[in-house]
Length: 178
Image (cartoon, rainbow, N blue to C red):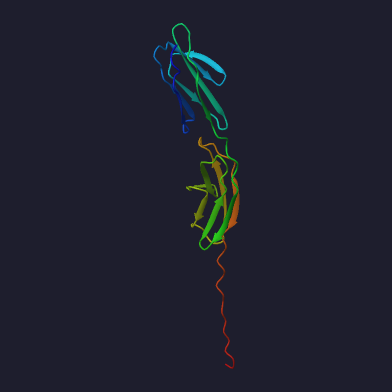
């Protein structure tokens, strides 16, 4: 009976795939590969899972079998993908020449998508300082929390107006007795 194969998953978040590979122990004729509860026979040493989904757990098992059908114990691996994060709460405040925007960091968030009036803004972490503000202008900031697969929550939003510049006071002088 062949030895138990070594099994290894590799997550490719960008392409939303999991590549599961395993070793071929000496004396192996074929394998019994299990994906969740479905088992199949293969002579390959890899399996590509495509179209993976957030919040899903994938379980894989592999047994090495000899030419008379005697199989090793099963090696298993589990890939548990994070759910889509909750919507972040967001707030903004006015400072001198800036608007400071901050948002919560929901569980499972690994990145954020921030927009100002529907224009994407590059931002890391969970804060942004907007120095490109105009007096008397209203801005809407929206942020989505995204997981490792790039799947994002619905947006949390806030609207704030950068104050108008006060009018220059008019001074009038009257001379007494003139």
